[in-house]
Image (tube, rainbow, N blue to C red; front, side, top):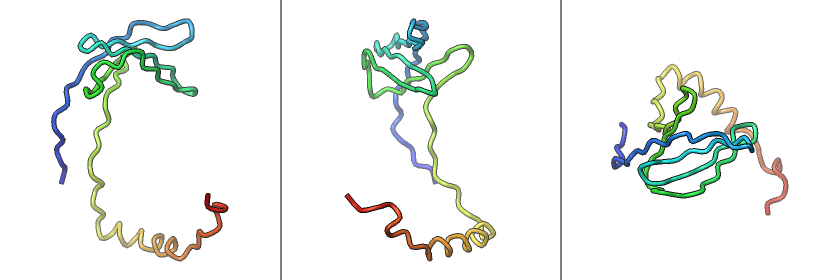
Length: 105
């Protein structure tokens, strides 16, 4: 059963351009949020102006639209799934992980 969260305001950010550093600059005309994004493999987000930090922000560039992730509950396993996984859960239950990660800090 999916639980509903209170509806958050959604703002659409605009791509203002690419800086000489290679970072893309985005701006939210609704609340003034401004940020720089550097893409993988060295991903980095720099918030220049926070704007409305409680609003969900989405943005797009070159036909690609970024938005928020939608999270729902895990699907329930069928009896067949449960039977197939039971051998693995039994195996995991019998493993001794103590000492494998080194001394506790």
